[in-house]
Image (tube, rainbow, N blue to C red):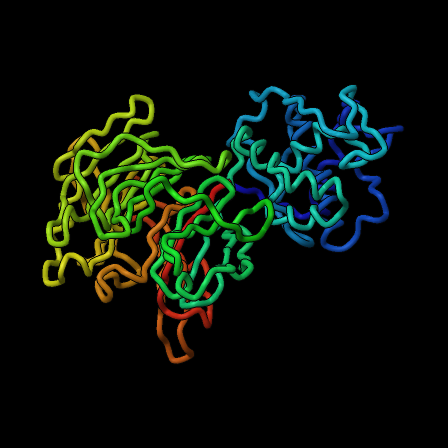
Length: 461
């Protein structure tokens, strides 16, 4: 949830608020509105917003209310996470030693934000949009070190601040990132892989602050990793048993991959856990059954695998649940009976199940009927809740992305029109699976991007 405030309106509203906190009034009695003259342009506007956000957060912590803010937009917009939805007053101040700070409520001359101690400044940066982090890193070496350390992302997790970005690869163009909140597209650097990896089938997974892309190079299986911290690609360590066509999903800083095929085409029942903070793979207990072309997801803190094939011809309708604490797999019969639908196509030609979890509720996009279905945990059954905004049956589910993005479902697919090929991002917030809810919203249209989504991942951090 996000409030959008203009700078001038916030200033008018807040300056009338009575507030005498010594931590809000800066060094030598400098008010937060007396900003350094060097803060100009877009970067200056962003830093001024940081001071206004500091005012709101500190006023909130001192049980003061800022009322009637944000009823109009005079200039640019400012993006601030909703304070009501995170219960800031319940949070305890977090002390983190950083160069240039003084924990006595004052700040040294080389503090991040003049007039604020660094503990407060770090909290402010954590609440700020991560779209601005690359600009902050260009200010000086101290900011560059802060952004590159990854500490702000750890702090965001502790504060419950999450922004979801969508990462897409269409045709053979470089990967692109889309920020839904600011409606902004960003092109990633070109991956320094060989031509075999470029043209071969790939799989992707976002975990922590990393985007992992799995594929094959001339030398064999390979994993390339894009890091938000370095904003560049590097090689990721291989799994203990490299594979393809696996099911996978992430939860915070960890991800699990299960099943798939090895380099010789053997269907696997093994699973591995990846820790993005350590950059290591850990072998997990085997599943009950081998499966490939399956899908994985986290729900209620447990990892699930559904669908897929146990051999080159046999489809699976059962699912499996992995409990991270007990390290035990549990088989769930008939968890995904949709595997038998659309048998006019050979099983190996159909895509893995298109599934997404929103607010711990599981949804699927049926490749044969073009319907969105919701899973009933208590009855182990599925019900139709909505029609898809695009056709999934035209390519057996391939070329279409069905993802969770915060509280919304995303359907991303290509469209061929008189003006060429475009990629369209549709979003919908499920209302308890109510089919009578709002229609699909067109979130963005990416022109000249082809009409086929090869890879897609949503990163929340």
